[in-house]
Length: 203
Image (cartoon, rainbow, N blue to C red; front, side, top):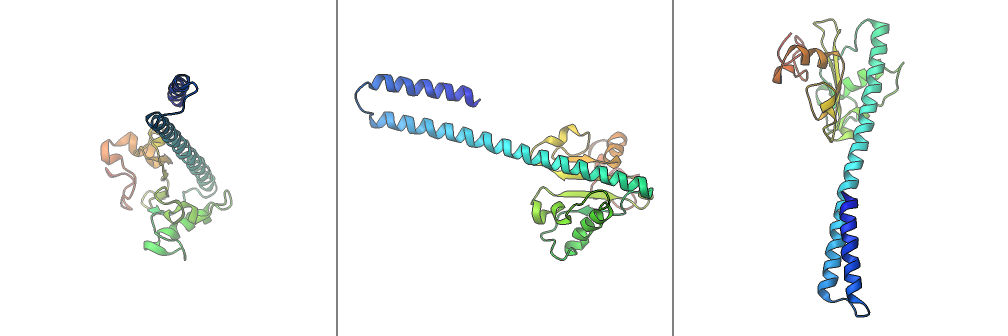
């Protein structure tokens, strides 16, 4: 897109230069050039911001996959997944690691559990450091911690290709897969369900 507009802008400026010859620019011609430069700058900024956003999402996806791999290694050794329900990273500050109904503490429980396989700062999973793009983990005691879900919120729609419920999150784990296979619509939601269920539809 930038090449298309850039070529048209260059052609227009060439035409203006040819017409001017030895005479100076008129005010109107100067304004036209300024407007063209402004449009080109805006297009470049939009394209740059999009590239930066996709790069940040790529880093998040790489990280959530690495954490998932460590969780699976934990399962091989223990026979169950980390025993945390509703381990969301949606607190305003980690600080003491016990803020907001213990959610930040649950992040620390998760990172401590997988520490032999992967070192992760618990605050790096929370909105204290990640803003709206935090991580979420949950499992259930009623199925002996045999299922889990892990996700990270994205700036773009990269979650559309992961097979999970959310288009704005990248989801891993067997809970998202199970819920999408068994339920449809909002019933397939595996976030924030009770300790007795692993999907919004139940079970």
